[in-house]
Length: 122
Image (cartoon, rainbow, N blue to C red; front, top):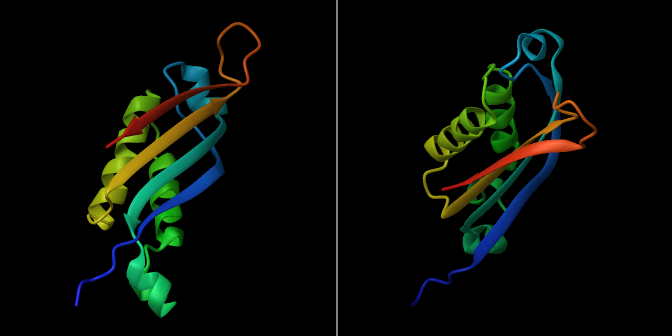
């Protein structure tokens, strides 16, 4: 009997944190709001059949990994975003595709701007 395949897209959207990332000293002291979006593709067939969290990707655990990484200061959003990808993939190596977007709200750019974002995909 052939095993059913069912690819799922799981998205954790606009997780909001207050953290201290940036190249400027004041960013490391004053901090800023950050939004994080995580999109991941994974096999979902078993979870759809069993309705058991043990057979699904635990997105609470994904949230905790993101939170753990955002609380460790970085100068660059690229560095922070890659750390998030690495920690998620280390815990869930069966993820097929992972995309993480980190947005710094109201960055100190010398003008009005909603945010600056970095998106990395593995």
